[in-house]
Image: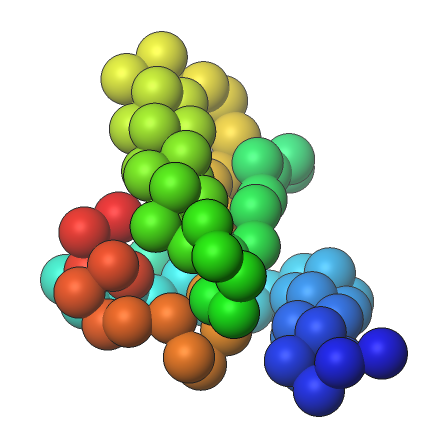
Length: 88
C-alpha cells in the first residue's frame, strides 16, 4: 500500500472514531451540527489530479447549494496544493 494511502486511511479512521472533533477551515472553526456527513478524500499523484479537484469542488458546491442536512467533509492529503484546499 502506498505511503500516501496509508496516511489517508489513518486520518479517515481518526475522523470516524472521534465524535467531538472540531471542523476547521481557513475562515472559521465550528462544531459539526449534524448526525450524518458527506465526506470525500482529495489527494494528488495521478495524471488526472486537476480533474479530480474540479469534481470535488462541484460535489461540495452542489451539496452546499442544496442545503443538505449533513456536514460536508473533505479529507485532503498533505501534498494537495493549498490554493485548491482554500477554494473549497
